[in-house]
Amino acid sequence: MLRILDVVKTWRTRSASIRAVDHVTLELEKPSLFALLGPNGAGKTTLLNIVAGIVPPDQGRVEIMGIDMWREPEKAKRLIGFSPQEGGVFMDLTVWENLMYAATMHRIPSSDARKRAKELIEFLGLEEHVKKLAKKLSGGLRKRLSVAMSLMHDPPILILDEPTTGLDPRARIELVDLLRKLVSRGKLVVMSTHITEDAERSDVVGFMFRGRIVEMGSPDQVKERTFGKVRVIEIEVLEDNAREKLAKVLRDQGRDARIGGTTIELVSSNVREDLDRVLELAERMGVRILETRIREPRLSDVFLKLTGVKLGEEQ
Image (cartoon, rainbow, N blue to C red; front, side, top):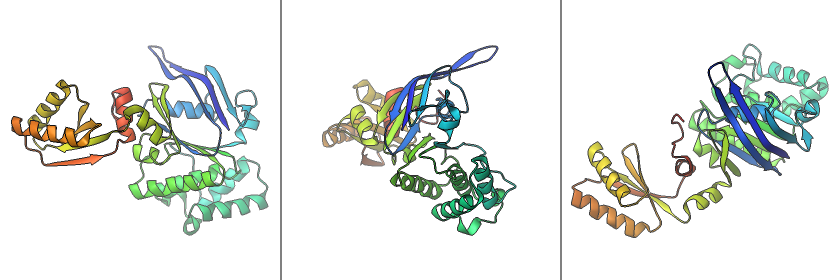
């Protein structure tokens, strides 16, 4: 359904050049929810703008259902819907007027447009907001409206740039639920995000860092390839000095131990043995452990392991 072949894009200024997309190749062959996961500045938006036919690549090809985006852009763009991170809706128009505007842009006949708009309003839960101005909607409802506008011409592929950014947890969950329903209706949904909880619910996740795709697969596949059959021991230590001291000793012993907030996170393939050792070590060092917890690795752990950078940190 979507092929990205050796795509390169460099932004140039008078003083510098930045390789935003660095020889990216990926192929998505069937309906699924694909999450492009990475921090701000990783190149996600540039890549999606290239796929959507907004920004031309310096090198490489994008094929939409076998059609080259940059050789036959009109044909290719009929097959995609695009919802940008910012904008995408007209604030001084109502929900209904925004949808009718999208229908006009796609040259949808009036009778078909009205029918399609009603279907999308019901599907996306916008029935109570049809006559509201977009600027009066909550962030979550505005995102839904943007998705509805991108679906007016019923494209097989939907591309969304950071659709859950700025939403509260409930609105994020509801929006991803809607995207999964679109997949069940046969659509390929591609979304960029820096929020690992949203990417956890994808069918396929691609980790993007400094313009490259550094890992790709289902969430379970990438976790297993990165860590194997392991768990993460969380050791909560409130005192900063004690926490740093314990983590350093563990690292000096060759252990994968890192600090997150008040917690030391220790990757372990033998939880019982490692936990006993940590407790014994802490007692010898006089470190007071408040609590220990055991969990499975998250996509944020995978990203940190692959890149050495936490999502949300500057590259």
